[in-house]
Amino acid sequence: MEISRNSPRAAAYGAATWGALFALVHAYWLFGGRLGLPAGLSVRGNLPLLIIDLVAIPLCAGAAVLALALVRDWGRRFPRRLLLAGAWGTAALLVVHSAPSVVDWAALLLGRLHLAELDAMAYFATVLYEPFFLAGGVLFGLAALGYQRTR
Image (tube, rainbow, N blue to C red; front, side):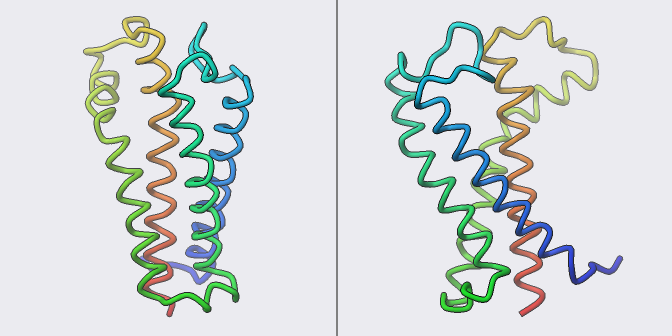
């Protein structure tokens, strides 16, 4: 199977979009938004989640910039190894973050677990949050692979 020349660019732009969207979601939650969170949960009322958002916003924004550096001309100012290490590291971190949910996803697919059995936090993590992490990991992995192969 041949990878088209546009596929790595599309993956990098997808990864950049992922990072920007996730930064915006965390900012929304930080400023009191609750959409997408389990009922009754507020980041502002939970110190650990507040700290996570304060850390996640610049990390996600930085991930978006990293993804763009893989495909934009200004990215050539950075050492190739640094960009590759950052992209592969981001991909690995995101996939590893979502890995524990694979057990729940398999149980759901096999019918050994039903969504109705999950509490609000487990439902949030299994159905919304962790799949988003996995998608980001796949996008960063494809972007890193494309960057590695094209230059």
